[in-house]
Length: 444
Image (cartoon, rainbow, N blue to C red; front, side, top):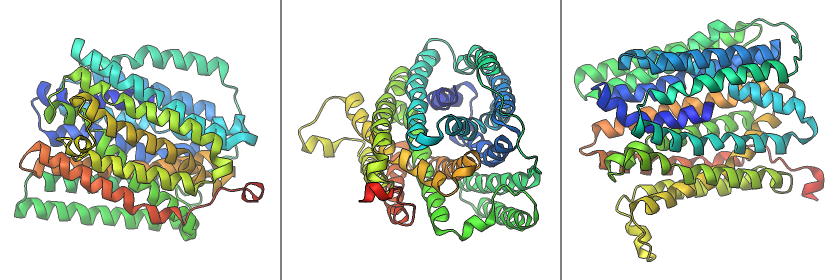
């Protein structure tokens, strides 16, 4: 449900512009505010899951996600939709760390394969979401993509109540809500600064952007100061002294920026630059999801033999080349090899390659983070997700800035794909600072 909703909303993005009579900047807030909410709350939810048990946290989050989906569908204007998407992000923030904790609890001796397969199952929503979303938006309304969460959400609530065993409350600890607030303030102010800079380049907008940048830095300082003093921090600052931890999460942040900065706007790219229909703009994301599922499933079973570094290197390199390939909006590169299959098929090829690259890299990078503290799977998964979604929120804002500031929307997309392709390549050195993931037997 979480994955379906994320991809379906990307398909509805062009309709927000038309139905609400708004611009790209405000429409993009429906994506970025969701990222900010998930980013701010995810590590806290991982902490709650490790403290109070998986079941109550999962149920509460699912109820909030489902009810806020109803509110999104009823939103009368773009501003209320942004607000309800924020609540939806808070509800969805616990899904990944809590579900990862459940999977790890159930399969302690086969955690690597289980977490890897969990990544591939998650991508099924990436197939259903854009295709179902494209069909619903073209046939009915964008509002219906939120309403489909209602029967799914309430059905899941009943299933979890009866099927998921209660693990009981763990050791009770303080919950660092103030730390989460400081962190939210830092990300939110950074996004506002980028938004003002994208809207118009003038002395006033630059001054406002700088002001919000200073506020963001101030919240970061408050967050770090607070985390040193609180008894149960969101981010254990001793981890920042660990080079593998820092490398793994900077890597996650860079990958998140590229993935969300590119994929969130593919439907808009397809409809505006290549003039495809709404239905086709959703279907065009299907090859990526198929690539992720197949590649991540195969990679999951090879992790013990390969370790973590090799698949991350192969995956991120392929991801970079495919993203750079998207910048060729006239497909000249493909035509050099005698390929000219029409716009949908030509566009599907680099999108498929981004999915294969991501599917190769994800199981390894997900497990590399957990390897640093396997006793706290949900907490570490929450931190990993936090950094990935920080990157995602920044990536969406940067793409929005490029689109708004460029002379044409095609030029804006071209610049975005080149920048993010280079960003993927820049993450390669970080791989060599992360855990190898090889057992003594595998190395022998």
